[in-house]
Length: 268
Image 1 (tube, helix red, strand yellow):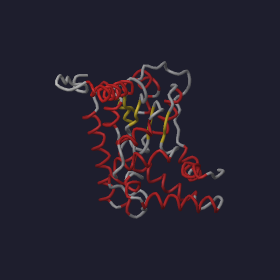
Image 2 (cartoon, helix red, strand yellow):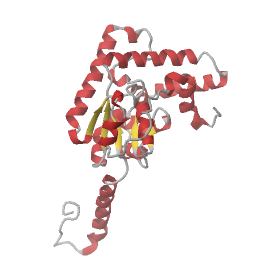
Image 3 (cartoon, one colour):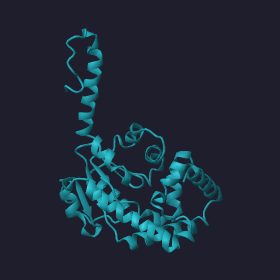
Image 4 (spheres, helix red, strand yellow):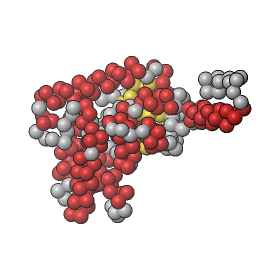
């Protein structure tokens, strides 16, 4: 409190309103740290973020998956890769209990400071398996885009192109900021591109475990199911199967179109 409300014996009492503003800001930070976001999934896309969305929902948390809610991405992407404000990025996760998918996996240091009680789940996948999964996703989505209503395909492609022409959003899509090229069939098979991408993947896992305190981080293998996750979050283990989920490969482009177009008022 002294740092925010220093003694000013030689100053008139006119400073009190400003001091009250500082106190209000402190109380707001304290309140924010004791409420709000409980869990941030810091594994990148295609490491089980959809499964985590389903699992955390089952555990009673209100979840934000940016692949399902694409409109949540721009403020985060603009902050991480552009000139966007931190507050605008934090506003995205306000009102949610848990968040995941790109670029949430890069937002952990800010969340650590803004929400001191929050915990983090690092979903783990073999690097080669992860790379193959991302490649397969792009192939299946492009194949699915060859069928379906022409209008929706056209609007989806225009919207996707517009987003990717934005420098921050481009870096924030398909982990391009890691040097990956999953959207380019030729380049993603280039050994140098693949090696660079997987190296970034591995360095992310190393850094997360270096930066986040061990008591706030769960390195989670989805194959282990409910016990480690529920125990880490102090939740009761559900009396149902662990919900392995992948809408994007099971529904392909139709699910991606929904995440892109639902805010355009189109009936999907």
